[in-house]
Structure formats: structure tokens, C-alpha cells
Image (cartoon, rainbow, N blue to C red; front, side, top):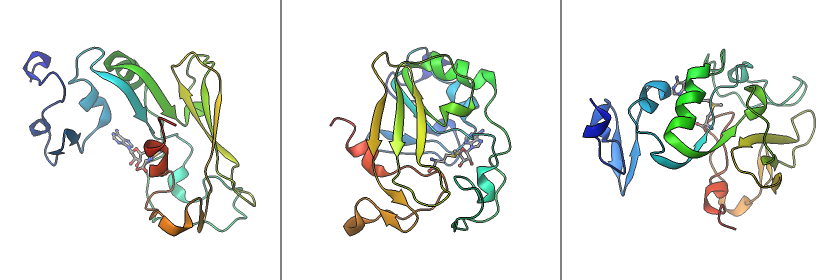
Length: 176
Ligand SMILES: C[S@@+](CC[C@H](N)C(=O)[O-])C[C@H]1O[C@@H](n2cnc3c(N)ncnc32)[C@H](O)[C@@H]1O
């Protein structure tokens, strides 16, 4: 399908098997590089992505030196390789700005504005996670506890289903 045939605001989910669309949000289940190729230049105002880091985080020891207690998310192989250069070229082409979690693993250009998420972790787990951004402002730090069973909002705990999952609260609070 040609880019010209696409809706100006959202790619039609009919493009991919298993895609769903509701309330102006389209979820596309597929290879991200192939999905990006369907979009016109600068289609998105902001791309927030969390690609594989290429550090075997899927093996269940990510964020610790193996001594701490880690949740078993099942044996998976999704973190063998980071995305190739073409992925990042496409990402920058289709979006005006980018926030790239795990940016410390990808050899991205210098940036004045990294996001630092202090997870208030304990033991051998990593203290923080880093996101590279295309913004020209200063480094920003967010503190949100995400330490095993302990979360920032214990009254409304999020179910953790992925080892590199990010709190929904980040999205809710992005304007603050
Ligand atoms: C670092 S994790 C991010 C997980 C995310 N934060 C979440 O909570 O679901 C990278 C994810 O990218 C997925 N992935 C790997 N290669 C992909 C590809 N070519 N296209 C789309 N997703 C891919 C992996 O299965 C993994 O779930």
C-alpha cells in the first residue's frame, strides 16, 4: 500500500493482521521496522519507543548482577540484538521528536536531554533507567519506585508482565 493511501492521522490498522483500533488509537502487532515504513515523513509528533537492547534482558537477570531476586517472566529470546541502523533512520524520519528508552545501548548522537528514571531500587538491581531524547532541554530526572513487589503507588499497583515494562504513570504524568 502506498503512503498516499493512508489516513492523514493514523495508519489504517487493516494494514496488518491482528491490528485493532479504538478511540483514535491503533495497535499494530508486527515488525516495527516494517510498520514504520508505511508512514510519511514527520507523521508523528513524538515517538516513544523501547526497542530490544541487545543485552539478553529477556533471560531474566537484567538490572541485577544475578544476586538479587528476579521475577521469572518465562524464557524468551527477544533481546539478542538491538534494532539495526535502518530502524533508527526510519524512526527519525516518521517522527518530529523521539524518546528512546535504553538509549544508552544504541550509539545514538549526543543529546542534552536524557531522561533518568530513578526506580528507588535496592540490592544489585540498576538504580536508574535512561532514555535518550531528541529535545534540546536539560537532563530530566523522574523518581518513581519500581522495585520488585514495591511500587510507587501501592494502592493501585500495576501488574508487571514484562521485565522492561514502564509504569503507566509516566504517560499520565507527562504534562506535569
Ligand atoms: C526492551 S523490550 C520493551 C518492552 C516494553 N517496554 C513493554 O513493556 O512491553 C523490547 C520489546 O520489543 C519486542 N521486539 C523485538 N523485536 C521486535 C520487532 N522487530 N518489532 C516489534 N517488536 C519487537 C520484544 O519482544 C520486546 O517485547
